[in-house]
Amino acid sequence: MLMEEIIEHKRDGLTLTSEEIHFFIKNYVNGEIPDYQASALLMAIYFKGMSSYEVSILTKEMRDSGEVWDLSDIDGLKVDKHSTGGVGDKVSLVLGPMIASCGAKLAKMSGRGLGHTGGTLDKLESIPGFDIYETKEEFKKQVNEIGMAIIGQNENLDPADKKLYALRDVTATVDSIPLIASSIMSKKLASGADCILLDVKYGSGAFMKTKEEAKKLGDLMSEIGKHLNKDVRYEVTDMNEPLGYAVGNNLEIKEVIKTLHNEGPKDLTELCLNSGAIMLIQSKIYDDYDKAYEALLNNLKNGKAFNKFVEFVKYQKGDISYILDPSKFSVSKYQIPIYAEKNGKIARIDAFAIGKGSMHLGGGREVITDTIDMSAGIVLNKKVGDAVKKGELLCTLYTNKEKVEDIIKEVKEAFIY
Ligand code: URA
Image (cartoon, rainbow, N blue to C red; front, side, top):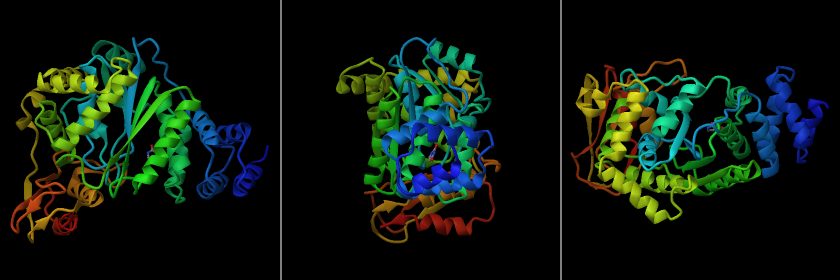
């Protein structure tokens, strides 16, 4: 088989065979196929697309390019959840303890933040002592014992995605629905859960800009699930404004704690209740959405979800005194209030601009090697739909940086009246 023929087939809009896809992934990962040929194929896929069958084969080959974790010795069904990425998205940290407190098993690997989006691992690491690196054995033991674990992406998982993603990043082929779907699903499938809930975001802070595109991506990922015998469901959610009020690592952990005390933002709480109800159904703990929703809400009200979070943080060596007393978290040296410059109603809060603003304040990374200031970020005071008067507080910037005039301007422009 020749790589140039595979490129030619896709260029001409043909359906690739499973043998061709196998040949490509195997030989690209082992270095036999050079980047220039892989790039040409990616671009052909970008323009010609792939059938759901082709994407399923691609996903399976990518999954099998590295270790595939077998979690069958954890009792019961294991659920996982993945968000396609947003700003202020701390859902997993609220949702995990909520569903685990109802008996579900969350076995989750998470990533780090890059660019305007934050990462669950970074947020967790803002809790002093928190350990994200565990072996498979420790991971399984923890899920078995307390019902949840969130750890870093194992290095040996899905090497095909690591190589392909880096190549897509520099060849303008990231925003291709078949390539995004196979990238997300291959990693999720390699980490071994039985059921997966996908939160497909759309809007300015998300990969998918419109609801229709997000739905297409969700449909394709659940098709892949069907082909590969996994219960994959998805929800399409709005990322036209940040989720909740807090953006930035320890600022978001404080909001997680509030939400687990049932005093959190409405949009975040609602998304967690909805996602949790679906996951409890996937876990076969409930077969009725309303009953699952009610159980989750009860555990927010009676403290069981919060207690599960404390248990989880303790298990992964985090200092729970911060969870019990969030005023212990470090606070940035500078807190800069931003006030409304006119009367009006907030029509949009550009999530992309807020995410970038938080990153520039020190709360995120421009490149993966940057270090993060755990206390930096932005806390909104207004949400979309709120009326504001000139001079009212819109948000507060938290930073240890001295020169932030450009960031102030950038954040002000994020508020559309
Ligand atoms: N997230 C991923 O893991 N892969 C993509 O291609 C896009 C978002």
